[in-house]
Length: 587
Image 1 (tube, rainbow, N blue to C red):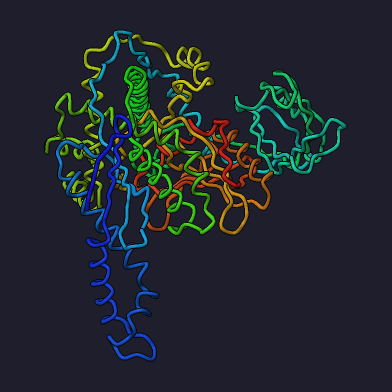
Image 2 (image 1 turned 45 degrees about the vertical axis):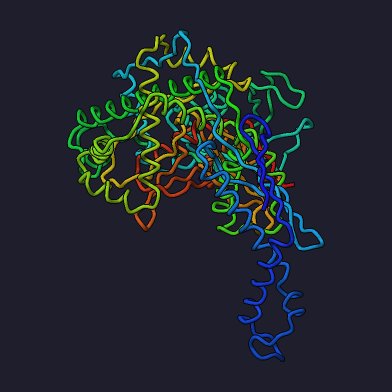
């Protein structure tokens, strides 16, 4: 067999093979004889079937199998065992042709890691999120807790809506002629009139109304669309279905004990927990934001050639995720492979580029994860709830979990090394939002678009959360909606984070219009923490459900092994749910 290797760019190569008939055909004949002795064909004793019949039935498959084995052997000998080639991804057979004499020719494409001389971060200061957790924030969180635990009762017949009432209404959008639009109807929407998020125009229109009243209101719309300029209004018909009174509990030690199921004894202790929770979330948000800047700046400063094999590797991973999450592990025959890969190729190239750059930086800085690094991680994650050794044992029993954790810790070490000597410019949450909003709209670095919410600890026993992948956490907020056709032929959507991870999935809809309306509902309701129902499954795992104002389920999360993981999932939906990017995969 003759082989040659030719470069096809800086990081792509092609292994060409020529197998002459006098070398390859004897192998085929020998394999067919063995096949003849193994198979049982009707009308013939074992091993006595005519050779021509055996060739007709099995010749093509035997020939293909032997050719692919020969290609693999040549690749192992000439490439895999050659230290010259630092392989990335896996090889792809791009051509295989048999000649009339019994030989074949083939081409195998493979990729190698580029030789990189990485340009580090510039002297331009990194923007660091400045924050202060003050008493006002704690008071706001406590007020939210009170609202969630209020006692709601139907008001007496004839009662009118007041500032502290809850209006349960049916809302119907009206067209330009003032006629109801059946497709734009929401029933049973609960509107607490003392909530700051309620638009003042709607609140003013509701005050003084009672059950059974119907009125029309013009609600302003800040965004331009369908020929309407920003600041236009839309007419809605509103019918008050019910008036409710809401009694807020007194905020004292007794309430805290009921709310935390006896875990926290006093109001002061709950305030301390909330302060600690907010502080940790702000600290993580600051780190995430710094990581995003470091990643973007390094990728802008370094031209990293990406081998096709690495891109294909990430595309395969994306496909596997779709198969696992949408098709119960079995890809349908009509899955649009080419369209799917074309649609996701840019993101796959970006992920592959960062992987190559990150790995080179880790090598340049000679970073390694030591056993004490694992010990420190498990001690931190276990806290006071469980033995760190038990947590480590759980990871070690999960296939691949320790390897994923190692990559995560390497990324953290790399981030620490790159930012140790960096210059910083501190800016508040509001400053960053305002200054980077335009960049975000133009497709630049993501903004910090949601302030952390306090997550008081629950009484449930803490479990281990699977290790994250090795991509920086702040790369996640570039989300989008996938609009797909489910196996039953109906429409469905999923909200994806920027790394492609699914964070929310809808039920199925009979029409595309209904599914698109569901997406709009996610965009609106995902910004209200009160619309997330935090649930615990029968198997002890955790998940959340996003609901509309009328209580209808809009989407459901995956299962998490810890409450912290579930809360991070909610935070991710709140960050990504406002995205206007919809990838239509129904074609």
